[in-house]
Each structure stands twice: as structure tokens, then as C-alpha cells.
Length: 574
Image (cartoon, rainbow, N blue to C red; front, side, top):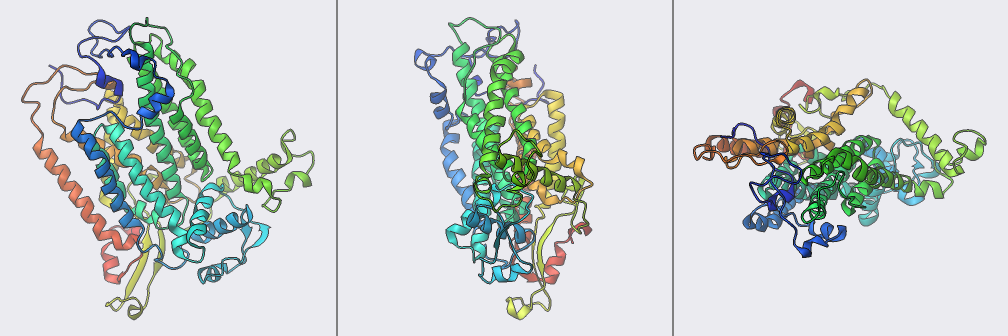
């Protein structure tokens, strides 16, 4: 009898159509892997475009599960919008690094590059005088994409209102929730599980605060999650296409066929380029997600019966993946600097003309100046060690030991409808502490599952966490902040939901390593674990309750000072 203590959710969508009891081409006798169903003539001629269109609708789940997909997506998305869009003009001043990004965004969409602002420009900008910049280029240390998005929101509703400042990040926060429903559904093979992951993202304080503040990290999270979702869709489409091209009557091959340029990978490359054009830290995701995608290709070839499946992935898939992801991302990144390149007023734009024969001389003058500017930016990022009261070591990020207060003020009670003698108004990046603490524990469980049973869902979730968190340990001596961790939040909740779902699944056919089906378990093993389900539901209720309790501190509402004190559970939160 197969053990029920260890199983992993199957990831390969082709296995859904497999016939039990037959080994795939090239599989050894007694293999627990299942064979692919022979493709019909109609399916045999399907090409990448047809497969890409079909992959828009995941094949997973029962008919009832599929019918729930759009209603649950809409419901969770509506909740996310309700928590992010109302009251965007609160606080009515530039908070934290909005003083840089909002003003830079406005000068960027006005000039094509970031212009210089005079000292003390915040008060005038907040009062509606938004054209106080001059045409001298300002030395900025982040690429332009995130600021272009913020600037687009300001163009849409006006630069003189906080709603315009924060519209782009608020919309991006809602989009991230909608995307997570879909990618969670694909990974976890359940609409309910995908909706649960998105619900956790929708109600988390770090995600809410970033959506309501014009910073770059919330935009970065959405772009990276979109790239991940595109690669998950590419995995499904490529596996189905590979199964059709390797199934009977075709003979087994050593490397397997090439799959050509895949549309979903191009989407991922585009989004990764935009992400790197928002913050350079996205480069780690380019590497991690690229390796993950090629790894999925290798496993798909293994399941299709390709004899040298790793070699096949490296020869047939990796070069095209590199061009689609790294190559396209590089092109998109350089294109994001078009405004700077087409004008002459940007910071350092004329460096090459002023320094003939210096730098990378074989580059055109504009790109040579851009390269020198990037060297200066790199020096800033690697050398920033200024003291800051909210600087935090990455070891404490997942536990939210030192969140960042974006805004704090003690308004007069009579002016803010506060009945207490002393009032507080704050916006904190603190995530829902119960959610983050549970997710941190789930990360450890998923890491164990990857080692012990090669759990692919856990590996996919950990890839995002590793890319967005671990590299910061190399820069722990720098001035860095806990709120950077918002970019890994979608993968954290995927870890948490995956662990919760595995703990509460009724035991049917057990899933072995790499998604292989094993023998059926006994009827006693198939009983639903009701106690564990009750615990998970109880924890979900606690998480939702904690979010409701902390919501005023994430949305800048005026509260009694005592109410604020009751939320400061740890000394590092003050």
C-alpha cells in the first residue's frame, strides 16, 4: 500500500488525460508514471498558437470547479479594490519616498527624463503647484518604468491630487490579486485554492499599504507575478504541445522535438524587462524564473518519454528560453530609457560627448552615456550605508520584526473627528502578522518537501521567495528595509495555501515525486481530515480578523492614540 504521509499535487496538465496503468515511452517496467493518451488527428496538427490560445483556460478541475473560477475571481478582486481604491487621498501629503517617486514621475512624463526640483518643493506640490521642476536633469538611482506608470496615473486624473499620485499602485495591487487567483488555480489545481491565495494577498497589510502609496515595490510585485503567471501558462501549453509531438505513432527520440518560440514566454520576457526597468532587484527573478521554466521543460520531456530529457531541455529549450526571457527583457529595458536617450537634458546624457575616447567606446554616444550613468547608479546602490531608523536586516523580513512606517502624525482631535484626547494617523508597511508568521513556517515545510519528495508546487513557490529575499543578505550592510519583502508576498501565500491544502486533502490516489500517481490507498486513509480542516478554517478566520483590526493603520485613518498603542505588539513595530 502506498504511503499516505507524503504526496505532492500533480503539476503536469498532460497527465490529466493519461490512461492509468501504462508506462510512458521509454519508462522502465513497473514505473508508476502514466502514459499519455494518443492524440487525435485533430490535435496532432495543433501548433504553438493554437496551444497558446487553449492555455488561456486552464484544463484543471471538475466542471463545478471551473464554473466557480470567474465568480470567485470577481469576488476576490472586488474585495481587493474595496480595500485599495477608496480614500486614496488619505493622507493628503507626500509620504515617505513618495517625495522622490511622485515628483520624479511627473517631471519624467513632462520632460522625458527626471527634472530637478528645488528644496522644499513638497509643500508647493501638495498645494497643486506641480510644475516647479526645471529642465536640469536630476540624478535618480532607479530606472524609469515604475515612475512612468505612476506618471500615467497622474496624467489620467491630475498631478495635483493624491488620488493621481497613487492610482497606478492601487490598480496594480488589484491586478496582482486577480492574477494570483489564476496562477494559484493552475499551480494548485483548484479554483478554491487559487481564490484562497488571492484572498490572503487581498487582505494583507503590506500589500494594502503599498497599493495605497506611490512607491515602486508594489508595481514591481505585480510585474513579477505577471511574469510568473505567464511562465506557468507556458509550462501547461508547452507540455500539451510536447505530448502531441511525441505521442504515438511517433517513435521515441533521444532529445525530443523543439517547440519553437512560445508566446507565453515572450509575455514573461516583456514583463521581466518592465520589472527590471522598475528596480534592478528584478534581475534575480529573471535568473530564478528562467531556470525554473527550463526545469519544467526538462520534466515535461521526461514525462513524454524523451530518453535524454535533461539534454533535450538544454539543447532544444534553453537557447530559445534565453532569447525569449533574457534577450527580450534586455531589449525592453533599454527601450524604457527612450525618453532619456531622445533628449539631451537628462542627468549624464551628454557625458559621452564631453568625454570622447572614454568609457565603452564602441557603443553609440547615447548608449555610452547610459552605460556610464548605470555605473554611477551601481556605485550608489552598493555603497549606501546611511543610518535610518527603519533599516532592517533581511533575516527579520518574513517575521515582520521591523516594518517601515510610511507616515505618522498626531492630528488635533477636533480637526479629525477623533473623540480621544490624543489621536494618531499612520500608514505602516506592517503585514498581517499572523499571515506572515504562518507563511514563514510554511516556507520551512515547503523547503522540506522539496528535499524529501521533490514537490514541484513547493519548488515553484520557493523560487519566487528565493529570488526576492535571499539576495538581500549579501547587501545586509546597506540601508535596506522590510517593505522590500512585499515582492515575495504572492509566493509566500502560495506556500501557505499549498501546505494548508495538503494538510486538509482527503486521501485518494497518492501523488508521488514529480507528480507520478501511485497505488490507491485504503478507505480509512480516504476519510477527510476534518480536524485539520477545522484548524485551517479557524486560522483563516483569525487572519481575516487581524486584517480588520489593523486596517485603520494601513489606510491612514485617524484613530485614538490608545488604539494605535494596542497594535504595537512588538517593540520593533513602533
